[in-house]
Image (cartoon, rainbow, N blue to C red; front, side, top):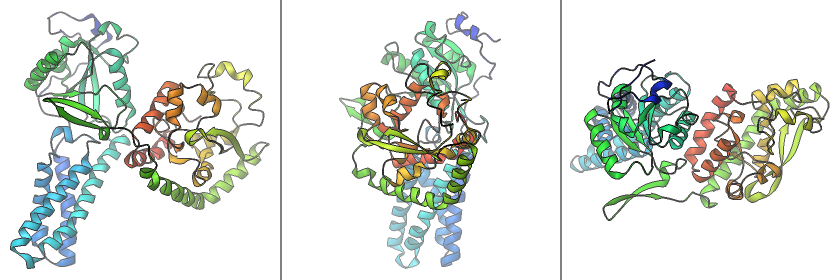
Amino acid sequence: MTTVRTARGDTSPLLQRGIPDTPHRTGGCHVPVIPFLARDVLAALAASVTVLLLFDRWFVPAALPAAWILSLAVQRAYEQHCLRAGTDESRRVLRSAGLVAVGASVAWWFVPGSGLLHDTLFALPITATATLLLRQFRQLRIRAGWRHGQNLERAVVVGPAPSAALLISILRRDSACELEIVGVCLTDPALSEGVVPDQVPVFGGVEDTVEAVRHSGCDAVIALPGPELEAAELRKLSWELQAQGVELLLAPVLADVAAARLAVTPVAGLPLMELHGPTLSRLPRIPKELADRLLAAAGLLVLSPLLVVIALLVRLDSAGPALFKHCRLGLRGHEFTLLKFRTMYQDAEQRKAELAALNQYGDGALFKIVNDPRVTRVGAFLRRWSLDELPQLLNVVAGQMSLVGPRPLPPDEALALPEDIRLRRLLVKPGLSGLWQVSGRSELPMEERVRLDISYVENWSTALDLHILARTPGAVVRGTGAY
């Protein structure tokens, strides 16, 4: 076990939890710039070759790679804080394309007959699309676990113990996150036991932050809001971290707020953070409604042979109907009949009382048992691969559900929630998949599932839906919490 001397020279008793030996910081960041440059050059070269083959003109193909890299650099796309996944890459790429288009327009003014503007405007969509795809491929590699912790930025969290624990859980929940928490410095270190995860070292108090940075070799410090972290102390900490070549990141008070809803507004020289309201009106959701129904109808058409086979297997495995129908609450509290393939024996409801002691959620309205004896053999297989949910595509086509949204709850489970939480969940349609389904499903405690559902409602966007849909196959294959 390694002990660490604090900034005051004594040994903090909190370090008895054990801190792994790590090399001292040598400078630089763990997110390499060269792979980004290589991918962006490759994207520009692909567009350049296309232009050369189609139009047999060489000027744009020769200049585009350098112009593209320069425009991305102007948009700060290679600064360390912009290299993390999910840091508004699309906006920077589109702005870079606009810069190149403006430059090509100016050059075309002097040589109008060269085809320069035509070739540039033809190449830019290819370049921008290829750049975004190659950068997204990097995030997919991270989610798939191909990097195994390599090149992740290391961070130390500073702030209250409960807020630090919440931040750590959020970062660990996102498999695409490139921040690895290597320790915490707490404003209330006495509360760390039982709050901060045991595998996260506690370096001591706020005054020990600089020493913790030196010991852990971290790249960033994340400061959480709290009365103990006043402006003067944060300013002093930023100066000390700057001398170490370490970033200081300030976390907002609201943890479950999408970056797109936040904007910095200067007032009297003070940078105030403006929180935009969630998108809850129907007009922006019309494309989502159309896409949901079209994709669900296409899915039913393609999967119809599989649905027939599953229905036959359910009927042959045990007595009873192939489909299970249950009352659920939909948009604005309207009840509808949810469809699933039956995965339990017909007397499952009668046996519920005798198994109440095994309910992993205690005596609440939600009832879930690991290795539930009421589940049939075919039912266990269907649950493991989430095939029992496929009939809900009919609910999506009928407009009762969406492909992505909070999970539909029975009325009794919904009534068990606080009224404000329940009403907020019902502002959008329930979904076939959702944030908590791709984050651990039944492995998550009820409070975490409710929090993720509310986070989806508050931060909905088309990009969030696509992100959840992209993570859904991986969650199904992993099978975490599928029982």
